[in-house]
Amino acid sequence: MIKNERQYAITRSKADSLRRALHEAPAPDERPDIDPRILNVHKAGIEEILAELTEDLQEYEQLQAGATSATSIREFADLPRALIRARISRSWTQEELAERVGMHSQQIQRYEATDYASASLATLGRIANALQVGIEGIVEPRENAGTLLSRAMAKVRAAGLSREFIERRLLGSPLADGGEEPGAATRRLSALSRALRLPLPSLLSQSSAGLGAESQVLFKLPSGYHQTNPLYLRYVETLAEAVAKARPIDGHRRSRIATSSRETHEQIRDEYGVISFSSVLDYVWSRGIPVVPLLDAAEFHAACFQASSGPVIFIKQRHRLAARWMFDLLHEVSHASESTTDEGWIALDDDHQVDGDEREQRANRFAGNVALAGKAETLAEAVVSRAAGRVDWLKIAVAGVAREENVDQGALANYIALRLSRQGLNWWGTAHNLQRGGEDPWGEARDKLLSRLRLELLENYELELLQLALEEEDE
Image 1 (tube, rainbow, N blue to C red):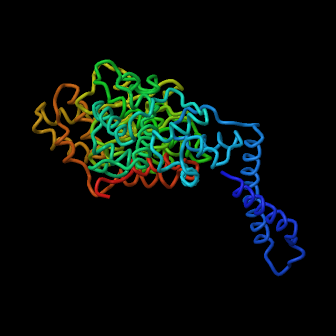
Image 2: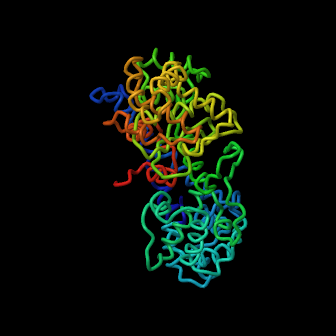
Image 3: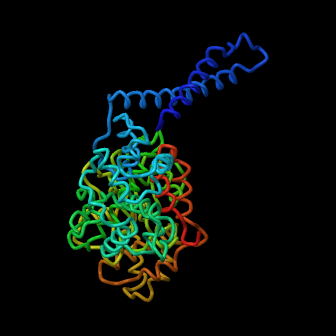
């Protein structure tokens, strides 16, 4: 962005030089000693830079002429550039703005050079008032940025997010014990506002109103489930929209999602030869559905979010057991196959499963039958029969039936544990002991996600938030 006359003159001179270079560029037949592809690439590079400079020049000229202006913004993070645009549209120099707000002109120059990164909220407010730039619903900046950040942190923590989570996943570094510098505090406030999809006034107000998930219709919780933290849902929704935005060009479904467990099982076997977490992950991606792995504790195990451009699946298992991850992923595939534009689903922890919710039970049966070749209930009955109804014999029974029927022992153990949980029995610890180790489903899902997304489509804050979400505990 061009911010003053000096920058405008320099940019115009650069643009003129590039136009001359394009005009004087030799045609391929004039330089047979150079590969034509190299000449074309060189020309395309000049044209791209020239287009960017021309756009900057036109914006500055339109602002100066009063053809465009910036009088109101909705995003707090948009304020710095809005102030610069407003000054130019009023034909004020940096010196004139400085005089009107009682500052030295060099200070305004430094602020604009860094997009007001070091300016306090009080300073931003003074300059916005002088330029008559309205911030929709903004609070009066009577307190310094550090105090406002402390207030925002207190509100977010009172709503259920831990300081460790906020620092690690939302901010990327610990807060300073002695308080943040004004510029750093302002940036942190902006980061919280964007990550949680909360306008700054809502983040700083004394009221708890407006903290609920922004699009509650996307989070359909069956009756009997506990309420998932709404601020965490807002955070995951931000991730979902970022991932949907960076979906590959061919990310739309190349073929439909199967709605029956038998058809899904057959499609995966036909395309990948085996039913495993890796093959299910590839199958889901082939249908244009991104899969995001998280490691945060509590809230939910898996979720299918209906983002603006289609479903995004989240898996959030603390245990790195491939069979568990496969079951949860298949559970969400069932939901994704039913997804519409106004619904989403969240599968909560195992001890919160509710037998009465048919859609959840249907998704569980779907996952079990895909993993166990359509024989989930038959195999479960065989295990119960072999164990003679005794819980302490189930471990041996699962191993025996899995071996004889040539199915994954971990997948069968998980299905038995899920079945028992509906009877009020917690058998998950034993089921975990029957899992095959040596795999890292979280790492595999993370690598596949990062390799398939077009990360260059994301804004810096979206990319940083996604990178923080995918950091391992000990990284």
